[in-house]
Length: 299
Image (cartoon, rainbow, N blue to C red; front, side, top):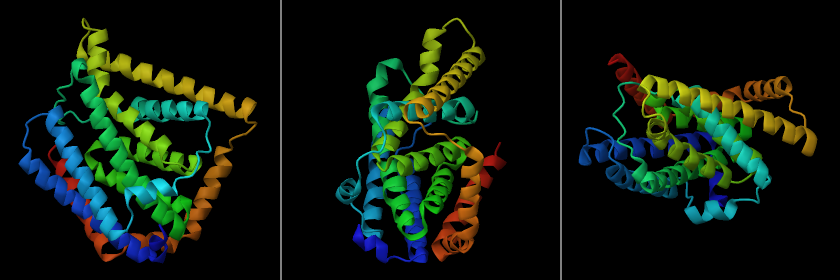
């Protein structure tokens, strides 16, 4: 990835924005070609493959980063197997207990059936791989080299959230956790695995809940699922704290760490303004805000 280091922050901003604009255009065209009134697993797999190819090719052309180069750039994970498992559970159930189960009611219905479990796993693998490859493997790495880890995590989280605007606030928390996991582990495998499990779980959690509690009303099933996810999240949080305290002898200081992050943001304030103020990034942000506003105005 040596060629990326020659890019200035403004050049990175413009090229990342162009990649995202190309992806938005690709999504728009694909939804016109594959017109469905509700969620259809087969068509979503086709759309995901095509959309992922557009995203990766655009990144290859504009940021000169191929899949092979991203894989070659990966370091050995700093996390043990136990840490990886705990962080995956923490991230997935944080997302579902706080955000993902509170989806918009006007979203198209998901025709998920437990008999299609492996098709949904394929869809989750495709989505998890290409989104993490782009946002954490390409964008985050590019911005880490030019402006530091805090800047890179924040901006990739912002862009990831905007690209999933109608699903807010789940992408904000999930995108932030994916960036943190990538930086902390030093490897893309953990965020890719967490993303795959999160998406697979998301597709099947409601039909699985209906299967377990066939006699209960949909609202009751959702309440049980939310409480279960939150309980697992609390348990995983406790296990993480115990693991780092007794096994690794590491204490986490949230207030101290927050102050360090705020200090880093303040010291790089001009970088944030430069990145958001380029021609194509401004256009991208404007289009996203218009789209989000039009979506919420229909509610």
